[in-house]
Length: 145
Image (cartoon, rainbow, N blue to C red; front, side, top):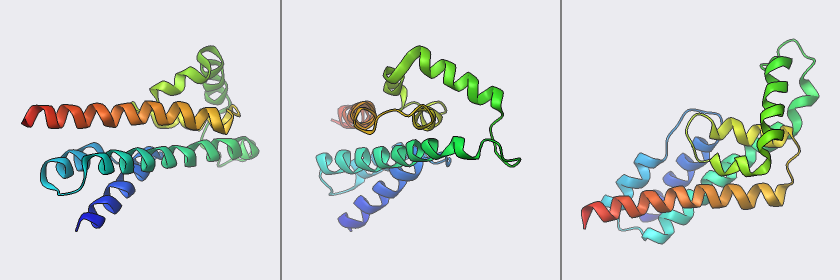
């Protein structure tokens, strides 16, 4: 039962960090309130899954420009350039917003397009996503007791 909770949370956090629409926060809160799983374990699994999902976006971004001249390419040259300008303006520190809904996942993809170094990407994204889940844990457990 507990192992299943960890696997479910990992999967939800992983998928939620990709460009697919899914949220992992509700599952984490539910597990915090109704599971025998360790709080630290839940936080670690959610953070790990979410960071690894962001790595998928980063990797896709690295490969994205190879296909930019194809007719089926989903991003117009204008939008790609606009994303590049914003990323160059704010730089790698913009990855501190990778935890945010709507903008966070595309931001990790743009980081790949911009060739953000893997080590710095992982460090900043782990910090951002880990703090987001830590705040969620703290708020959830603080409200109930």
